[in-house]
Each structure stands twice: as C-alpha cells, then as structure tokens.
Image 1: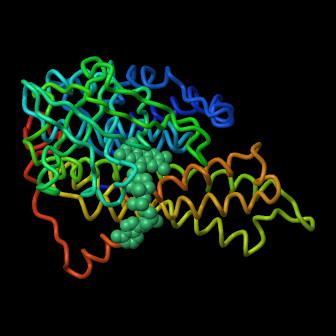
Image 2: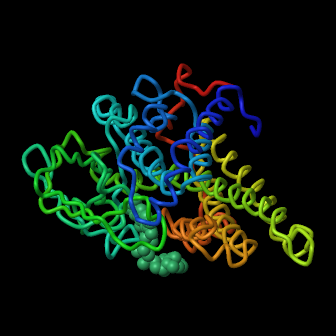
Length: 403
Ligand SMILES: Cc1cc2nc3c(=O)[nH]c(=O)nc-3n(C[C@H](O)[C@H](O)[C@H](O)COP(=O)(O)OP(=O)(O)OC[C@H]3O[C@@H](n4cnc5c(N)ncnc54)[C@H](O)[C@@H]3O)c2cc1C
C-alpha cells in the first residue's frame, strides 16, 4: 500500500515537474494580487489530471485514487489554490456525478468534465447552512420537464470559472433532509437566473476563485438531476468523502513544503556562529514536521487504498482531513517561526502556506465537525455501512487500478 507502482511513480514525477514549472514562478504574484489563473485548468487537462481517477470510458485518465492523492500533494506542495481547484472538480463534483449519475449522465455530463473541457464545482454552502447542511433553503420547483432553482450559495470555490455546478436544493422543505436533491446545474442551460460574483479580500487562497452563486429561477432540465429526488444529502456526503481525501492529501504537500523550506533555512541561517538547525528548539519544530509528513502521507494513502478497493472510507477520509489539515497549519506556523522576521514578510512563502492552510480547517467540514465525527466513530455512535454506489475503478475489473 505505501509503495507506489511504476505508473504512480511516473505520475508523481510528472506532477512534481508540472508544479515546479507552471505554478512556482507565478504563485507569489498571483497570491499577492488575488489573481486566479484562467489557463491553469486547461494546462492540468493536457496532463489528464481533471479526470485522473475516472475510467477512460467516461473520458478520464483511468488511473486510480492514489494518483489523485499524488496530484493533490504535488500541487499543494507549491500552491494550495491550484489544489483547491482540483479538489472541488475531481473530488467533490466528478465523484458525486460518477457515483449517483446514470449511464447517460456519465457520458453526457461527466465525460467533458473528466476530459477537462468543462470545469466543475460543488455548491452546497448557503448563508445560513454551512456545517448544518440540513438547514439549506435553496428551493427547486418542478416546472415542465425541468426545475427552477431559487436561492443563494456562498463560498463556492471556482464558482466564477465553473461550467457545471453540483448543486443541492430542496424540492420539499417540509421533508427536511429527505427533500434535499442534487442537480448538475449547467451554466449554458441555466439562463439569466444563474449569476456568480467573486468574493474579494480573502484571508488566504487568494489565487483561487471563490464565489457567491445566485439562483433566481435558474433552469435545470430533469435529465440533470443527479440521483432521485430526496437523495441529495447522500450525494453530498459521498462527494465530501472524496473531497476530504483531496484536502488530506493536499495537506501533506504543505507539510512537506514547510519541512523542506525550514530545513534549508536552518542550515543557511547562522546565529551565535552556529546554524540555527543546531538549536534543540528549532530541531523540535523540524522534527515535528518530519513526523507530521509521515503521518499525513500514511493517512491519506490508507484512505486512497480503501477507495481503490471499493471500500467505504468516510471515517478514514474525515480523520485524514482533520489530522492533516491541523498539522499542515501548525507546520506552516512553525516554518514561519523558524524564518524569524524573514518569515513575517511576503517575500517568504511560509506566510502564504500559513494563510492557505487556515482554509482547510474550515471547508469540507470544519475542524470541530471532524473532531465530532472522530468522537462519534470512537464512541460507536456512528459506523460506516459498505458503499452502495460504486466508486470509479470498482467493481468493474476492466477499470480496476493496476498494481
Ligand atoms: C476558502 C473557502 C472555500 C470554500 N469552498 C466551498 C465550496 O467549494 N463549496 C461549498 O459548498 N462550500 C465551500 N466553503 C464553505 C465551507 O464548507 C463552510 O464555510 C463550512 O462548512 C463551515 O460553514 P460556516 O462557514 O457556515 O460555519 P458555521 O457552520 O456557521 O460554523 C461556525 C462555527 O461553529 C462551529 N460549529 C458548527 N457546528 C458545530 C458543532 N456541531 N459542534 C461544534 N462546533 C460547531 C464551526 O466549527 C465553526 O467554528 C468554502 C469555505 C472557504 C473558507
């Protein structure tokens, strides 16, 4: 499980090289000026990254879940904003459509997303429904052979860039969670009732687009409903399993980046005639990063291994997301500390890693929600049933991950 096969190793090389060549030179400026790169997605598409874990017959690259984790780790090693774009597309949007969509929807809606000719996002959060998904108020009214959506989604990553919004609305508020329904809202079909507005002045992830998505009688054909009416909550939760996996694997990239930059600086910086790496208190911070990287990598790989084998990973993905995001944020803080005043400047990337890693304690389930989940599993209040909706790569032998 912890050894990569040749295909995965080669993919890791490709992603590492891509991040160094395409992201690293531009990221500091893009972050400083809050300027997402509109070309980035098509560059990722040229490498097959948007549909990395989706079978080839649906337009994907036909690799596996470990490869998606590798992509997230390597992208976040350089740029968490880029990894966020991949998370919402590949983890949250595509997996939900793959798992809950029918064969026709997989060909018509999923294929262009997996090929990377269209970009997806995931629109769940509302002004009064964040951690408490059950409180969502966006309404879907049946009209002819479609639905009209009315309501507002907030904090939607890549909302301004997306062509397809995996969106959640209720068809019957009186049914509570059993009224929530998933829709693949298509920007080209939604009409003037769909509007997206960028959120400015974010604390972090400034090179990533985040938007308000407003539905004012936006049109969705019935053929774009994902799953049955009332199944939306389950769609959202299974998408979040995959999204959290992407956040967890990305966080390992932040930890590794913090370790590498801190080790380099600890050798370079001299105080009292000694490298600061000789001081025990600096060593303690570096040692913590080395420990946390191994933990983070093992945790996301365990979740990826379960996914590759068609096994449910709700507990393991949530745990990996919780532990890895907390550790990434701590490591970024320590990296800044090791750099002293230099770390307090935008010239040093530690500050950017610190700001960016803060978001992962909030999105896709806050730190407190993950803590609560971990407790509920440990106390036996919650347990995972086997997956009923097959993940990409399973159970069809032809699509099974190699090695
Ligand atoms: C950069 C960024 C990108 C995002 N991208 C997306 C996206 O693409 N799609 C999307 O749908 N959403 C997205 N979100 C929204 C994100 O998922 C929500 O912000 C998150 O779920 C928390 O909801 P909230 O902000 O309403 O906080 P609230 O739910 O109001 O929580 C407020 C505080 O109360 C705590 N709290 C809540 N419930 C409990 C509890 N039961 N026990 C203990 N404490 C609790 C929380 O942990 C938090 O500290 C994004 C957010 C950010 C910051």
